[in-house]
Image 1: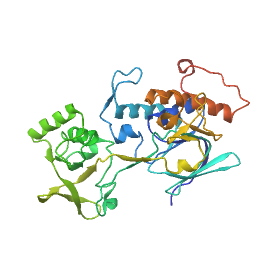
Image 2 (image 1 turned 60 degrees about the horizontal axis):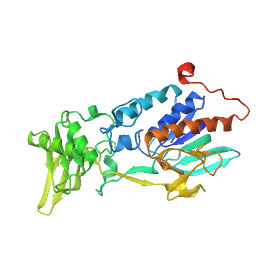
Image 3 (image 1 turned 180 degrees about the horizontal axis):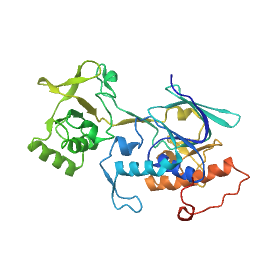
Image 4 (image 1 turned 180 degrees about the vertical axis):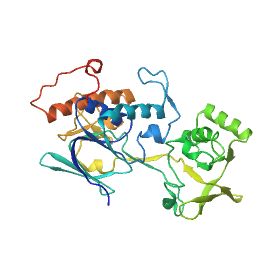
Length: 337
């Protein structure tokens, strides 16, 4: 039976990307408790799912930071406030009971919160799964759509499918610890950065990576949970590759999903907010990050960080209208117990 989170939290944050994680910290600094819900299996949003090994250059005080390290640091920054993470769950319904929001997920989990922050980037994310029979039974054991910890794949026979940055970057990153790495792509050319493609080809020449192009995935060979091989094919025929692990990197599907049914003001699939409070047209629901629209909006992570702070302060005033909020800098306030 799935757990029911009956404890009422101050804020339910929809989206565990960098902006959602920073919202946990900002709420925590004001003494507000949080539950975080995300459709992906891991926190971090696109930073984790699409480009964990890519450097980001426009985060203040970090001349360069890898996306995965940014998420790791944001998680650590939020940790003192003990957020509840509910991952691999999509919100399918929302209702309000006398001022209390009730959210239900596709896994029959129920969340109760006084306020809501939507930090869902471009909407709900899910992996684009390859059309292979029985793939769902291998997921989580032999088939993964993201890499959280490289060490989990040490000494394994890995097949990576895809032609973009994620596929190429992970082929390179895992080549030094895996038993073997095959990169399967339906075209001879890759859509990754030129430098990454150059490194990929160098490693292939040195025998650390095998590039299988132009091929497509055709069949999973195994016992239904554990892979033994993967059959790939092209116009000239088929061949089997020994494989313990399949990492399909075909990008993410993005959609607003049930958010469209929440009576929120939308502009071209973005949520319209008051830029001074980040509240939507529905009292008690706020939105921050790339999913937000207002005049001169900048789609930057640092903009989302600012919006997270503003939304947290707006929510505090909503929850405690009779309580005066004395603003203090973190240098003097420290981390609240």
